[in-house]
Image 1: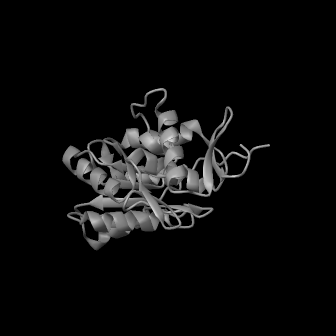
Image 2 (image 1 turned 60 degrees about the vertical axis):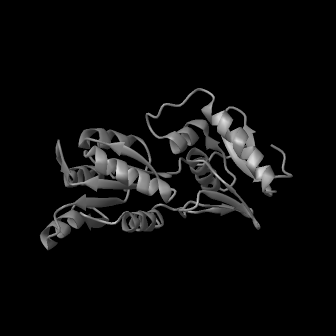
Amino acid sequence: MTDTAPAIATRVALIEDHPRLAGLIERGLASAGIAVDVFQTLESAWHGLSGQGYAVAIVDRGMPDGDGLDLVRRLRRADVRTPCLMLTSRDALRDRVDGLDAGADDYLPKPFALDELAARVRALMRRPTALRSVAPSFLGLSVEPESGSMLAGQERISLAPAELQLMLALLRAQGQTVRRSALENAAWGVGGAVTPNALDVAIHRLRKKLVAIEAAVGLVNVRQQGFALRAADASA
């Protein structure tokens, strides 16, 4: 019998209604190997966070349909424990205390450096509640999110952004099967335009790259379930 890994959060939810700032944050985190889904209202974020696992939520307080703290309170009442980092132009001590009291995990006033935001997001992703390292390894295979590379021994090869997110999800599963839907969400996000064979094409490219760096693991197709990393000499 084949074990199936639980859905593993590899993406970050950004709740931000300012298109330019959202784009800057999305690109900045992507360059650090962190994939982002953007939500422009609190209501859409509520549906996304309550229905789809995210590693971290970055929440702007000043949203068109309310205060981001209200979303955090709603999530905590529903026992959604996704770590929340608040973004705000308010930097008074009272505002920070209110955020932490509402259930937020960190607080970053604007303006901020993207490097600092990425560092704080990584710190939240490493918390015990996330249960996974931001850069996991399995049987000698690992990734470097910052450089977008996959490594086996002294060999390395670059990964496209979607390939990087697929490998993070597969490595975190530690040999268990990851369902196709979970892999598609990890690579292209919720609501992303994904062609029917996009995942199969990406898996094919990853298999070739694993061979190119002489990795001790292979990517196997677990029939009607998904994909998993297994020792190269193990049967599928």
